[in-house]
Image (cartoon, rainbow, N blue to C red; front, side, top):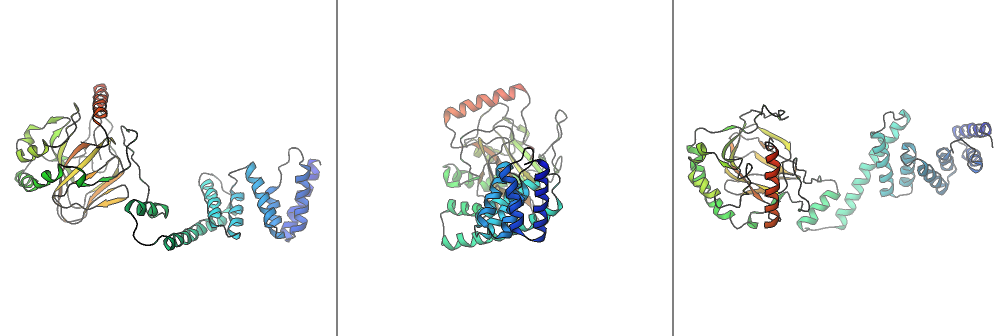
Length: 381
C-alpha cells in the first residue's frame, strides 16, 4: 500500500466516523493497519473510536492498548482508555488511566482544546470514584483501629498527607519516620516537668535578654523568612553554639540545673543548645524543616495560653503548661499564636534514642569536622 492509498483510506475512515458509521470506518482503518505502509502512522486511536461506534469493546480496548504501546503518555488514548474502563465498571483501572492523562496534561505545554472537557470529566470521575472507594473501605473496616492502622487508612483515603523527614543540612539513614515521641519514653521527663514552677518564676523575673529568633548574618544570604529580625518570635539563649550565655544563664540557676541533668548532645560549636522561645499574639512561624534528623526538639511549655498550636507533619499539638512536647523537627512543621497572650517554651535538643553510643560518637566527630570547615548553619525557621 502506498502512502497516497493509506491517506485516501484514512480520509474515508474519518468521514465514516463523522457520519457515525463505525463499521465502514473500521474497515478502512483495518486495511491500513493490515498493510502497515511505510512512514505512515497507524490509526489505532481512530480504530478505537470506530470500534466503540460498532459496540466492540474488546476490539476498542485492543486498539487503545496498541496506541499506548507506541505512545505510553498519549493524552487522548489515556482518556479514552479511562472511559472504556469506566464503562466496563472497573473504577480502579479507569482512575489509573485518568490520573496518567491528567498528570501528562499538567506537564504538556499545549493540550488541544478539544481534550479540555474530557480532562474535566476525568477529574470529576476521580472524585466520584474516590467517594465510592471510601464508602467501600469504611463499610468493610468498622470499629476502632490500632493507631498506626488508623493513620494508614487516613493516608489511603487521602484524608492525611504523607510527610517524611527532610532535614535541610544532614540526613541520617535508617531512622524511623516518627513526628512525635511520647513523654513516658524518657525517664528524665517527670523530673524536668516538676521544675516548671521554678523555671517560670525565673522567667517572669527576667526583664531583658530576648532578641529576634531569626536574625540576619552579613556573611550569609538573608533567610527568606517573614519573621526576620521580628521580635514577634524571639529567643533568650541559655546555651548557644555549645557555649553558656553567661549574661542570661546567671539569672536562671534553677533552669540551668534542670538542663544539666538532660541527655543534651555535646558537640563543639553546636550543642548544647537551650533557649526560651517566645511567640506573641498573631505571630505565625511558617512551615519549614530543621537542619538534622539525628535530634529531637523538646518544648517545655512555661506559659501556654489558649489559641497556640504546633503542627509537625500531619499532626497538630496544643501546648499545655508543664507537659513536655518531643518532636522531630526534620519533618515540615509550623507554629502559631492565635490567642491574646504571649506563649513561651523552654526549647532544647536531645539525641534520637535510636542512635546508639558508637553512632553518636561518630556523628559528633562528623559534625565538628563539618563546622571546622566554616561557620555552622543556624536554624532560621
